[in-house]
Length: 307
Length: 307
Image (tube, rainbow over all chains, first blue to last red; front, side):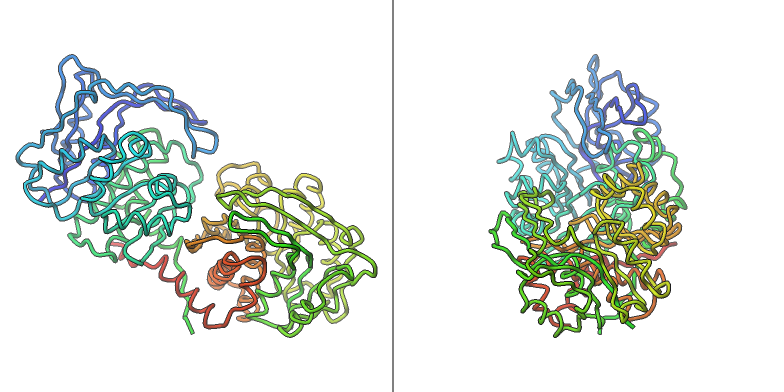
């Protein structure tokens, strides 16, 4: 019983209207693991880093029930590095630097103790590598979640569609759903995308929340209106980690429980936005999480008797 | 017992990616009245039109319990006319023509049977006229709702702030809340705006729903994801009409009931987007409305037990 996550473990340098950081630890798999580990262990990471990486961070992940056997440490290599600057509205951002470094040599190999995972999260990397990981599973996992982005729609659409046809849940943002489907209406976009294979589609809308589509059903999870969005980096990955961690903990992958999982994922993501990088995400208590989830309940709760 | 609405009764010509109209009936008070009249009668309109207006439309309003005693018909005058063209994403639009016409002479005079209304809705017009109407009320209404827009923040901020200080509920969109408060965060914006006087603030976010703020509480009503947003003209006014109509019907202006009213307002607004102008709004049955409200309930419904 485990969750396996493939994705980047990396360095980021982030600039927002509120300040900026030097190189800090980031990467999709890092956010996913920190978030999911509040709900479930072990989280098996598959990734690649250089020997410039912060080894204390790996130990911190291990202390939280994260298995790092699948993280290849490339001697003399430099870890993937991304740097970006957020606009005043925090929704847009400019990429200042993308140094792929060791990611250019990434050829994920699943340790044997990963191959029977019940839950698999394919983080945002080249669809070829995502397919490669899928093929290494000893059996079909109970649930496969795929995250991707517009870049792969631009440069690797055929392979991306192959991955999409083999997963249970796809998470993308609203712009990406429109690009992938060619439909402006998110309802029409969802109908088309669900026909590509996934049973569930989550469309992330940032400060406007997230939509969960399944067959003819739709669920709208709001985002918590925050006093300050300090740094949204990793919010989508934190969402995915909380979502899958909650599902794995409960072992229930029904639509009803997936709605709860979307709320938990949204709650986790709201924490990540409060400080730079993974800082806030690492200091949470279970009481913090329950308190935040109850704020979501209050945020949308109303009672109407339909006559 | 009545609702009094001051606002425009006008002609619109609308262009969307789906088609375009000739001059059709529009105006804030028209949408508000059609929407509110599904819940409550009479709706007293205060407005001004030219004798070019469609008199059948006035009779249709009357058949629905709308009192038109306060609509001044200016002999030889031309009704207010607005023409706009929506962008592909339906969120942005360009104004093609604004002909104020009789609106330049608008000096609202409340018939005596309007002056004791329990509910007053000040639609989006010059704040001087909104103040003028407030001053004509024989006593403070049970609830005063104000709608306005960025234009008045640009050209008449002092008078606008005077009106704001005297109302119970303010409805504006997210950009306007930011402009009025000077705060980007909607939570901070709401805190500042509530200090200006209103007990309740509704921030409309179009396809992303609406937020209701009151003291330290916040409620997030989603917008229904629609297959097609055909024409959003009048959606905000339809929302306000449904919101206030529902409140007046129940006679309950608590926060709990205002949350329900926001859902009813959102449901009514979703209908308006489905056809050009007031067309869809005029053909609803009470079953349609209940059905749509139950779609909203399903859209956001989840159950989480906080441990």
